[in-house]
Length: 199
Image (cartoon, one colour):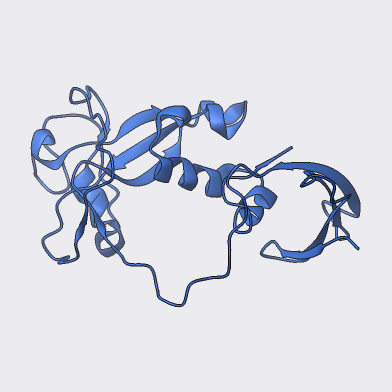
């Protein structure tokens, strides 16, 4: 008997099963019976370097706010890079976290700091405005200058986003890029096998 998984990809269900169980097999078959991608039976190789997730814990994860200067969010993939190649070869606009005095949560001191380099010449995105985007609907885009046209803070004080290749992103940034741009099946399978690679 071989294990069978019913996979919910967000809009419909598909099936995945192992071809054999010899030596922790990495060969699977995936069946999608619905258009537009199906009906289709695909052979997959799934590398599982981190093993399998166990049952979900009973206590909720503890939230820690990002420390200022560490990665807060990935804003977008570079528009030129999105025209070709894999998402793992693209550059991403990484936004540093800024101090949030309204959040009294503990700070995640383990998060690596982003290297912001020198202030950008020309267009730039204000990190302070981006941090409040859900309340203000302002994403901090500036056409230039040393002062943010939205919040009035200096570039040095407000901070700015930087373009970073996927390979140099912190682990949290790579995970965000994977969730947004990897094939949907990889994101779903990573809930079972963290960090798995699908071919």
